Amino acid sequence: MGKALIIGAGGVASVVAHKCCQNPDVFEEIMIASRTKSKCDALKEKLDGGETKVSTAQVDADKVGELVELINGFKPDIVINVALPYQDLTIMDACLETKTDYLDTANYEPPDTAKFEYKWQWAYRDKFKDAGITAVLGCGFDPGVTGVFSAYAQKHEFDEINYIDILDCNGGDHGYPFATNFNPEINIREVSANGSYWEDGKWVETKPMEIKREYDFAQVGKKDMYLLHHEELESLGQNIKGIKRIRFFMTFGESYLTHLKCLEDVGMTSIEPIMYEGREIVPLQFLKAVLPDPATLGPRTVGKTNIGCIFIGKKDGKDKTYYLYNVCDHQECYKEVGSQAVSYTTGVPAMIGAKLVLEGKWKKPGVFNVEEFDPDPFMDELNKQGLPWIEDFDPVLVD
Ligand code: NDP
Image 1: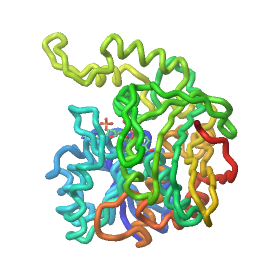
Image 2 (image 1 turned 60 degrees about the vertical axis):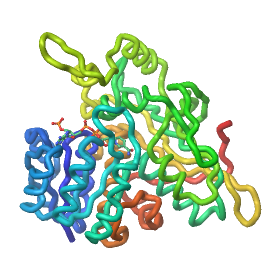
Image 3 (image 1 turned 90 degrees about the horizontal axis):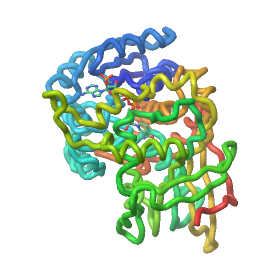
Image 4 (image 1 turned 180 degrees about the vertical axis):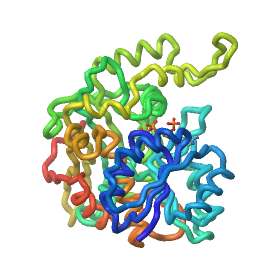
């Protein structure tokens, strides 16, 4: 059916590439292109030579010119951006110039301010519309599946959704005292920032990790979880009618938080450049270099993730609660595609989103968050592609 250009060769890209190769009818050809070509080649080696034709290339995705040249050479139907959030705008510019559809899993973040929001990418709405091409924003798990779950709940289960709590639990254990499950720089920027939630049409800000709750997660057990700012709060706040409050909670273990606090206290999580032996370095980037590479955690991580959304609202004039979630086993993911569940739960939805664009089911000119598309074909694919969902019509609520 079509060709996909995957940009990035990290943990998430590896899952996207494996899953594209499992769907050769849709992805006849893929190209994996990243800054370090040897990583693309190593990934290609791991793909089990199915019917999908695989090639690799080197590209600096910060440079629009290089991207345009690559796209013009390969002529993909869609670009799947699973590099880092810093590359979103340059890749969108290249897609515009070459009139190619676009999909990513994380919203743009300027490298020098730890602040992520959609305004930079939403500014491309008219340009994509005029060019007749589709951009799907935030199509991982959270953001991504959480938005699809919200659209599904709105379409089938509620007349009005008033409250959403997104709960992201990673009950996995990799055996290291401290490591992050995806890109350490992006992860630490996210969790060390102030928290916030959306209430009555405005943001309520909290100190980092200020709001803590305990929740008993199905198939995982009791975990402490903390309120964080998260990017889908911004788009869901606009796209879910009748919404009064949306919060996002993520679980963290004691060891992770103690290490993080210590690293923060000594300045290792700072993104302000410092001079070291005559050379400018960013402490957080140096920290990333000494931490375990998330792509190597697969073989050693055991346990499960449980990510989903609790909805509270009204149906036929009555109060209603509804919990939609997925449970994913780290070792099962490793057996299937050689990655742990955090990369898996991000990469599978990215492939599904791209598949739906290629199939024309999620194709419309403009820039969209996932909840703006029909959730039904995506929900079907989740069940088929390794992320089945579970419904609970009487969930325990978060106070
Ligand atoms: P990794 O750090 O493992 O991989 C990132 C890849 O991008 C690397 O291969 C890196 O190349 C490449 N890259 C970085 N800069 C450039 C550049 N200028 N040009 C070309 N390639 C570049 O990250 P992950 O795979 O863990 O995460 C990928 C994305 O997924 C991130 O944006 C992350 O925020 C997002 N994510 C989304 C989630 C969701 O649920 N929505 C959850 C988890 C992650 P090199 O190898 O040379 O460094």
